[in-house]
Length: 319
Image 1: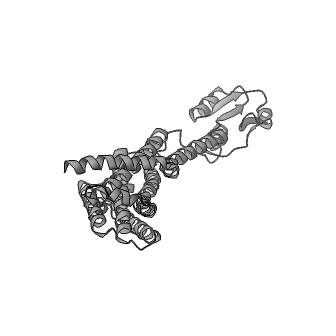
Image 2 (image 1 turned 45 degrees about the vertical axis):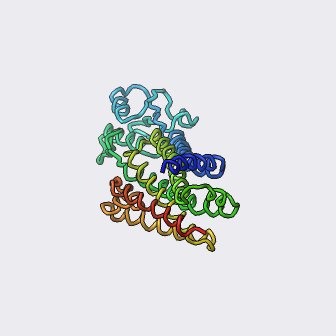
Image 3 (image 1 turned 90 degrees about the vertical axis):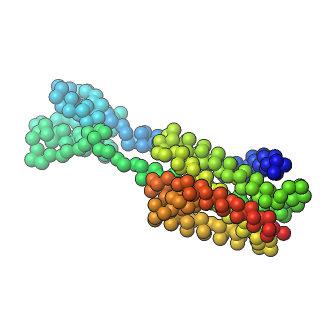
């Protein structure tokens, strides 16, 4: 037992070094989070640059009007000729009087332009008023959208597990390194366990980086539960891919990959549709997490059983 445990540690270390040397694998683990974060930053920059300009040019002499506009989030610039600033594109909107009437000229639609129109309608006593919420007065629920976003990334990492389990075994079998591993005087199941645990650690590190980036940019609720759900799914998919590849020596890589991905997506969908049931299953718990239901302890137990089953298949069926 002591020899097997020591060998397990060294084999996990060797597998992690092998993963780290694979540039494609490392990029696959890191890029989803980086690309998502970069997309969020670019989107926010575009919105701020093109849609969040709150300046309004206004002719002087209307202090009460200025107070009302500033209360609604506008930055009022008092100038003798507001229209000239708008024509030079120095401000996105301008308000000025022509005779007894107010004129609102704008190059940009949105809440702030509507707020300006509403204030001017009140100023002239228009027959109908335009009411807009003050900044921060309307609560926007983004939790469900963020859970779907993180859930989609989690599904990607879970499917990576199928590839890690099946493709890595197929590659090692083809280049002869698997035969060298199996020549060691230890149980064959230890090799399978080392592969599954190393892949799970790599997937866990990848999703941790992704959750950290998203948490810093937009905030992620229940980050530990998300990490648990994705890691559970990734470990289960890795075990499943490895077991199918070990039990099918004459089959190409396509079969185990397609079966593993189909079953994984089906189980995740089940968890999304029935989260109170899915939270107890290692794959379905990822779908349940999209509904805000974290995985239970039973899901960890069943994940351990899946890993044990994969090690048994590797030991008995691999040829």
